Image (cartoon, rainbow, N blue to C red):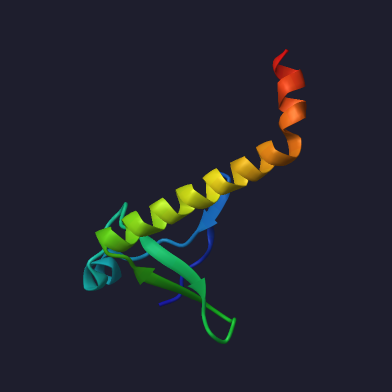
Length: 84
């Protein structure tokens, strides 16, 4: 199957045929992990279970929180001055 990368808003994407989605048990809104193929010449989409998606979301939130804390540690005085 050959598809074309299309503009979708400010992003690009590939339309996946419904029959392929059905084979994988996916539908619009299903969480998938996106990675480079081992040879670096392709993209792998791997379906996630609800538990894996929840774990990934929690991990992302923790990384964002840690990044915010590092910014406040480094630039806290700037934020205080801006708040005055």
